[in-house]
Image (cartoon, rainbow, N blue to C red; front, side, top):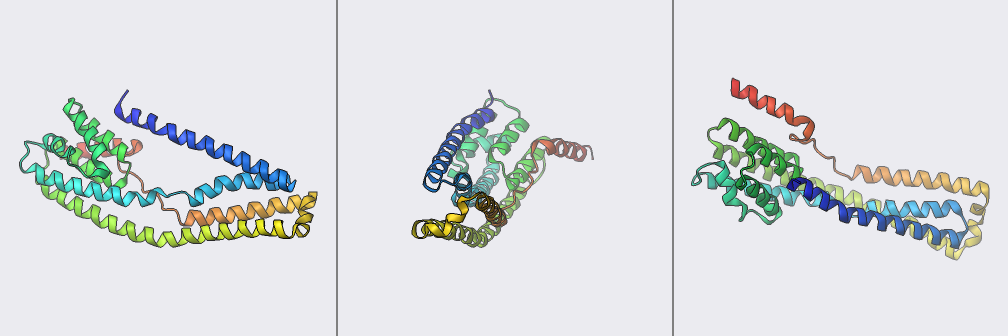
Length: 266
């Protein structure tokens, strides 16, 4: 089993465990609300709310991306500086693996281990790009791939330019993330106030909500709940960053390889 597959298999275990915990919590909350209110629709909406609130209040992976990009930029600069003294790209990668930034050290060590085990540079760098899974990192890896296959000149200058570009993108993503954080805060505030108001209204004036216990009231409650959930979903989607298309994603690798071959022939 390759190291990339092993990492993916290992990463699924906590995700699956968290998924079942979320499902169990949703069922528990739905049962509790159903017993307290006696409204089947309210119980169903409460269960769905548990899943939705986790998506709203959960930590966003976009906050981690700039740190990863910063580590990629630093490692690229290390490669640039090491290439001067190293005998080639392979030796430069192996030499910088142990001192790579913490945000990228594990991936760099696995890349160096593959190269040290005589894995082909193309396969090792492709697995490295898959582990990072970022479009900016793909540009750097693609440059390394073409440099290893075509023996590009002035690779140090190219790596320096790519590192500066990565740092510029870090600054841009941080600014975008700061603007989106206010939108996420607004969504969370709306969710907290709405749920708190409904709970307080049910506890203080249950007779006011009594019509929702009828069949017609349940239908109205279902409609209101669906529309409210749709509104929160759209607000959350607006605050969620769009995932950039990867250059070295599996469907596009053949295109990149053919482009490199055409450039080599030219």
